[in-house]
Picture 1 (cartoon, rainbow, N blue to C red):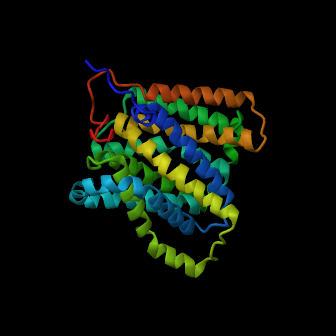
Picture 2: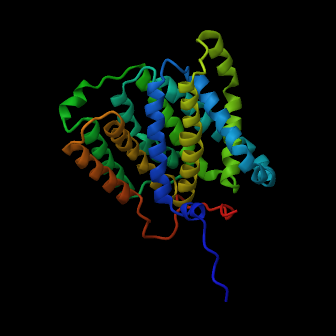
Picture 3: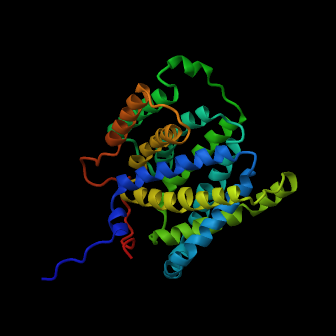
Length: 320
């Protein structure tokens, strides 16, 4: 009997949902840092449409054979695919960049931790999937860890947080992404690259009317080496790589079990501040990290009962 052929590193990674869902918030944390850094230099719709157009162009050569093969399945669920593109690509990211022009970093990171709650609400409304006790407990434990980090171990800091227009916009964006996360479990059985190419391309097309309005009302972005580097980063890491990892992770373990990994975004964000901005790690960082990771482990555990509606919807085609 012939021995099975060795798997490639990419093939190995695609079956590791917890690693995939850990990489996702790492890339998204970088997006939040960059988005805040370039606020005012890149108008939000401009940054969003350039990001997704560049991501579409980069992924299309790899996705094309799968798109051709999967086109019939996409056409059958074209309405669903359009909604996923509009919510998860066009609207969510544009609102996120818009909000970062107004909101403070502390507020944005704190609100990011509400992501699992929105996913749970939409999973219940759209799919009838309820949180398990372990998922609910994990979300609460992780949220406590996020609060410890964001408040620097000082509960009095909570009273100093005020909501502004950017905070409201950011909350709306998170609610929309929660909708996308839950609804994405109903996507057609197509290759992940087909899914990314279609949603990136269609999502960019949906932004054209708003982009035209923005061009008429805001200064045109200058394509300096710095801005081109920013565009390259957001097109590759928070776009192609993060959505590949996130969509595959949700596919393997379901939206509710994947949602607590949202809490790793502020964890990675604070770690980036330590590494790149020279902030010194303190005890509250370690306590917060421990709580977040404990919550993620608790919530992401495989249910003891047989597969539920919230678990994998493998397409059987991802190894292609």
